[in-house]
Amino acid sequence: MSFGVPTNSSSEKAGRSIDSTGVILWSSTRPEIFFARREIKQLVLLSLAFAFVFLYPILCDSSLSGPGIGAWLIRPQLEHFTAIPSDGADRDLFVQLRWVPYYTLTHFHQLPFWNPYKCGGMPMLGNPESAIVTPFLLLYLIFGLIPGMLLEIYLHVAIMFAGGYVLGRELGLVPLAALVLAAMFPSSSWLSLHIALGHLNFLSAAYIPWILALLLASCRLRRWHLAMLGGLLCALTLTEGNYGFVFAAMLVAIVAVWYATTQLSVRPLLAASLIGIFAIAFSMPRLIPTAELLTIHPREIQLSYLSWHGALVSLFSRDQDLCAPMVASFLFSEYAGYIGAPFALLALIGAIGNVRKSFPWVLGAIFFFTLFRGDTSPNAPTMWLRLLPLAGNIGLCGRWVVPLVFCVGVLAALGAQSLCERPQQWGRRLAGILITVGVADAWLVCAPNYRYLFQPAARAPAPSQTFRQYYTEWAPPFTSIAMAGMGSLSCGDRGYHVDPPKGTVLGYNQTGYRGEYYLLGAGKVTETLWSPNLLRYEVDVPQTTSLVVNQIMYPGWRLTHGNGFAYAENGLIAVRVPSGRQEIELVYTPRHIVAACAIALFALATLIVVWRIESQSVSRRRSNPC
Image (tube, rainbow, N blue to C red; front, side, top):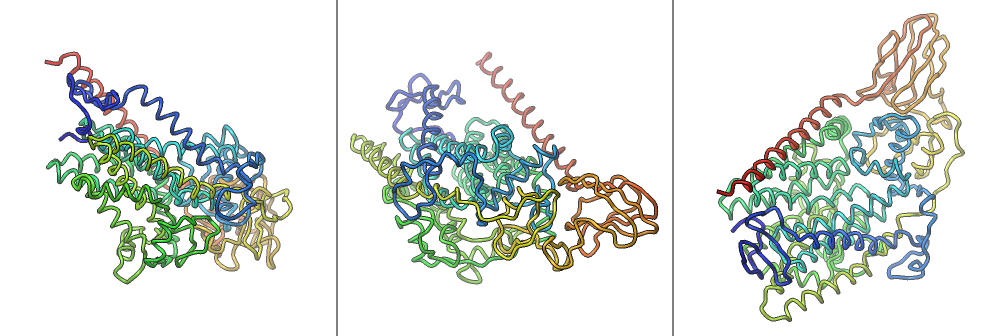
């Protein structure tokens, strides 16, 4: 049996596999042609339509809370394209992580390496929740912040739908069965609830089905560049987010080991290794700064768990609204992944219909469910997982619902395939009815949560003419404070942050504030340039002293002009300067960033070269079939 080649519900004619609708699935002479051209066009249009229908509530009235479809359905809020949500909640945190790079690039014309607007200053590129190394950043630069964010969400949902369909076809499924996987994964409440809270770092899960499809295609076609391309997409799961990379790596390992075992071939393992190697290489510009930050400031481990009752409610309850009561040790939204009755029935059929095909997905579902239950005992899988390098930063266990729902989605697609393979017409009709009812049910239950993304902005301080730090007792609206030209010192437990040591970075409204820059001794200092990555001062001192900047000192800040040396003064950026008058220039650049970019470019060049070599080899075989 060849990898991914459909063998069921098809007839072999002249070296081609044709399904019951007459669509060409695979050609022995041109095995790379897996879809008819019409099918590709239909998939693109269907993916865009699916994303629009499910995301329509994002444009509706967010002030009406509660489950169900209500007055919000006919009240679109077009001011979303101009109003920036900054309500002091998680959605505000992730909007700020989009606004700072956008503003740094468009206003200061600098690469977004440093974020002076959060927690007294911290690396932007190294923040595990930021999304900078991504082609979607171009959407923000072209269309603006809010349109760019809406397009980012919309296109990721469309990519997720299309990827599910392509993976289904690589698994040998007929179009109807492939649609089950395409629709179920992005329609579940795990996505709508996370987006409702502004957790845009989960959008990178859109690449998971594509990565697995490229793994199978690389084995089927015996072309290594497809696995390398899968590594590029796997890198995007890290550079655009964080958890998607872990999910993708585990799923690739499960699928590769299973296919290697059943096919008695090392090719799946080699392809999986290539995905991993190139994923690391392509993600180096983000991976190195993130690893450095997590090493210096490891994230606090948050123990969390879910009872059996809570797990059943999170997966099968139709009350998936963001305002629903929590059922676990943390926020309800962290633990939901709705599986409707039609999809659950299809998954059950798929699990028992073809054990050989369903086994890795059943195994994956069980494994991720145990992780989903969380820290239920000292020997729970999540506790052992945290012993891996940097794995202590994985955080709340409820996020494992994402790969769990994905595995169930594959089982549901296999169930639809089993029905479609029955000789009687009722099997295909039943599969069509179940997917239709399942998608409609998911829209009614899950899609309404999207309208919660745009919430009214919380009160913010008046704009400042110059950058300065600001402290507030209440949960700060990060984005509004940054747009006002100030940095927020009140981080609390809001996402990943680096708390400045007590008494170091001070807000202008706090006792002991000496300014955003000052001298420890006598003399005069004037700021001549302020920007996120570059600071410039005119210093005139009668004797050796120190210039102190009211931001956290972090590896990467260095003196690029002037006499003296940079160091940490009570945790703050400082420069020891000799007597006299001079210009001081401080620049922040992530350490090893040049080497990291060189590795990523080398990986890209290798991918292109291998693709060219393999393409030319295929062309020669076609021209000389003997």
